[in-house]
Image 1 (tube, rainbow, N blue to C red):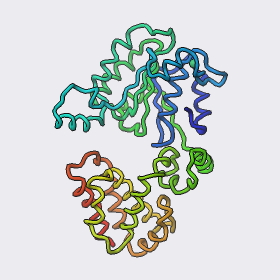
Image 2: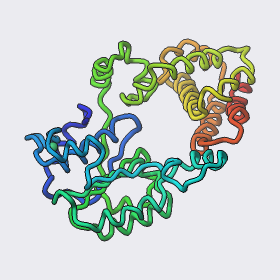
Image 3: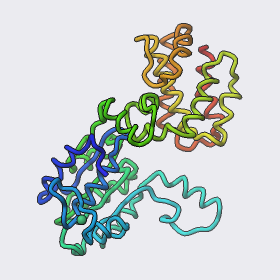
Image 4: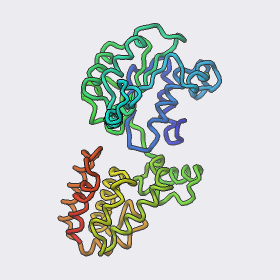
Length: 332
Ligand SMILES: [Zn+2]
């Protein structure tokens, strides 16, 4: 599915059907529809009877195979899961493997070897979709680079990433990059309404204008966030109370995101008298901002930004949560 705000980009690209670049780097913000774009592009490139606008027909043999997940000329390379790594039944090892599912490994790229060198089954393109491409580890990126340097004819690599800067420059330089845009606010709100979100303003603001990310804000996550921020806004909440939910039920990544947005809002409130993300806490933040020092806030923001980079699997989530909350408690 191509999201409406990416339709014109899709048509421009698919118009080159007969002469596709051999590697396309599809980049852009999180939650705007990059993956959807890449999948539909792959499907349309493989379709044997595309419509006038270049979209896949949905009913030719290629489309049927693609939709059933077994088109012989297509591969999807994504994070290595426990299944795709070495066998092993030991429980501890299983846990380690889950942790490992943050990377695309060199074996996953090397295993494409036979697929890359045999003739395509349908005499069309051979398409490999890699997402998130920034998860390629160093060895995997090097293996990919070799393939990008000597592309077998008819091969199209689609690399999807929200963080292109994490890819080696050597890989990026061999790709045609497309940066997919965000929709404007009105279009994003309209689309969210078509998805059943009755009041799209707040989720959209929380997601920084990214509609698919906004969809995630509509259920449990929203509830957890609201009760946490209510505590955060209170003067008498203790460190123990604030960090408690992050032991188990709420992922630590969410905490870092919530705190970052809280902090950015406080800074924006101090400088511009408005908030960008937490529209529903604007008045609480206004009261807080009056008492807080801008330099302290900027220092906390730096700490949170660094935490964001290293957040994946803290040994002790609660201690980690406390280390991020403590500076804020000291400010108030
Ligand atoms: Zn088709």
